[in-house]
Each structure stands twice: as C-alpha cells, then as structure tokens.
Amino acid sequence: MRLRLADRPLEDGYLYFDRYVHQEPAEARDSAAPVVHKDAQVHDSILGPWTRVGARTSFSEVSMGAYSYIVNDASANYAEIGKFCSIARDARLNPGNHPTWKAALHHFTYRTRSYELGPEDDHDFFEWRRSHTVTLGHDVWIGHGATVLPGVSIGTGSVVGAGAVVSKDVPPFTIVGGVPSKPIRERFPKAVQDGLLAVSWWDWSHERLADAIDDFRDLDADAFVEKYA
View 1: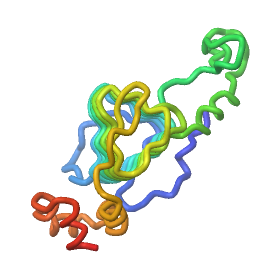
View 2: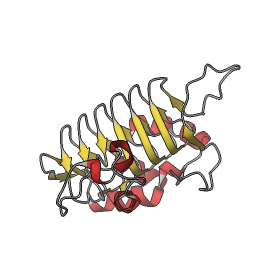
View 3: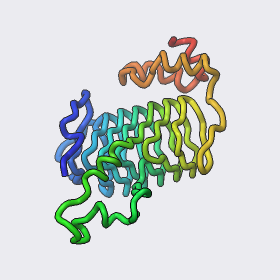
C-alpha cells in the first residue's frame, strides 16, 4: 500500500513515521521530540514537537501538530490535527466507515485479499475513506469517549463533550455535546474569539510561550486578548 504522507514536507521538529517500532534510546532523547508509547501503533503519520501518543492508541495517515496529545485507547485515521489539541481516552477520530449504498456492508468486498476472494483490495473504497478527512483546528479538546465522524471539521478552541458523537462541523470556540452532538454554547463573545484568532498564540515560539506562561495562568481570555492583541 502506498504511503500517503511520506513525501509531505516537514516543518522543523516534525517527524514522519512509516511504522512506529519502539526502541529504547541509545542516548539522551531530545526533550521536544514526539513521544509514542511502546504499545501504540503509528503508521504513515507525522507528529510535531512536544506531541504525545498514549498506550494502545492507533494512528493511520494522521498529521498531528506541535504540543498536541492523545492519551490511551484512542484511534485516529485520515485526520489532520492542529497544534495544542487535547484528545482524551477512548476518543475516535474518523472511525471505520462502510458502504451503505451497496448490497453488502461487510468489508470482504474491499478487503478482498484477506478472504481470498480476489487478487486486489478495492482501492477506490479506501480513496473514498481518505476523501472524508477529519480536521481539528488548534487548541481543541476532545472529551473522553467522544467520536468524530468522517468528514467533520472542528474549529479552533472548540470543546467536544465526553461521549459525544459529532456528525456536523463545529465552529471555532464552540462547546458541543450529546448524540448526535448539538451546540451547547460559545466559550467567549465574538470579539474575544476574533481577538484570540488574531493573536494566534498557538503559532508562538517555545520561548515566547515560556515568557507568557504567567499570563496564560493568571488572565482570563478577555484580558489576555487585551494585552496581546
């Protein structure tokens, strides 16, 4: 199977993983390098600096931006994850999909080789899956056990409640929950949302983040925007 992300240009500090195989480091590890648990599976994926992938989590054709993390027993397929995203245990991003318009739902029709029913798998089916990418903006929080269905985009600063099933796009800075998910409220007034997008702190350097750490801790979003806009 052709590797889809192998030829994508990498930003500084980003690493490409054909297929992750755990090895104990022979020397001191770069503290900013991605950390992948020894029991995780990462295939044809790109991880940014300061990222973390938890135990028994699987990635396939995923790009995850700097500082984002996904904890244990989660999965992501065909996904673009921004920076500083927080993805909880048992979350599912772009879980397996089936051809509801065809006579058979079962994957023998597209994983044909596994069942010795033909010489080739159905490559068109997998291209259809790839065409429904899940996209997360920056600083998105995906709650415990939430599912984001194929083709959904979740805006920067949004929150998906625990156990939610997200079937429609979520605007920036919006909290959603339920099955299927529905908007609960916006996190901030529009002026503060626009201010945060203009500040774009998620694009700051590591050094600038360190300089501003007290303001991240002590200021609410309105005061933060007033200071840095």
